[in-house]
Image (spheres, rainbow, N blue to C red):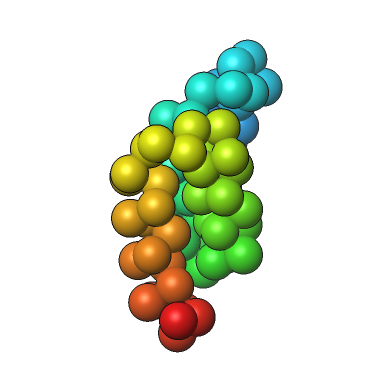
Length: 72
C-alpha cells in the first residue's frame, strides 16, 4: 500500500475520533493532493477553515491548491 493511502486511512480514523480537530484535515488534504485527488483536498481545506476561520495554514494550503490546479 502506498504511504499516502495509508496516511489517509490513519487520518480518517483520527477524524472519526475527533471530527472537530482542524489539524487533522490539513495533512489529509496534502495526502489527497499527492494522490491526485484535488477535489477531496479542497473539501478538507474548506472544512479546516469552517472549523477554525483563523487558521492561516488552511488558507495557505487551499491557495496553493488553487495555484496547482489553475483555479484562480
